[in-house]
Image (cartoon, rainbow, N blue to C red):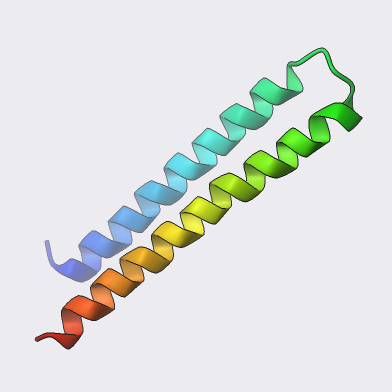
Amino acid sequence: MNKEKLLLWTKRLLGFIAMALWLFIIYEISQLAAPFMEQAPYCMGSTMLIFGLLTASYKGLDYWYMKGNKTK
């Protein structure tokens, strides 16, 4: 498998894991007995954290790929 395909499938896998984790956390938060106004900060915080980490992972993978291509 070449680097482009490995990068693409790694990004797809990370995206799938992030979406599954996000849906699980949002579902767990929604099951709490607290009213929506108390749940909202946890929903927003978890969303920002999960997709922030996903974005950082994507940028890191792109940096790693570009750095590897420049040395050749």
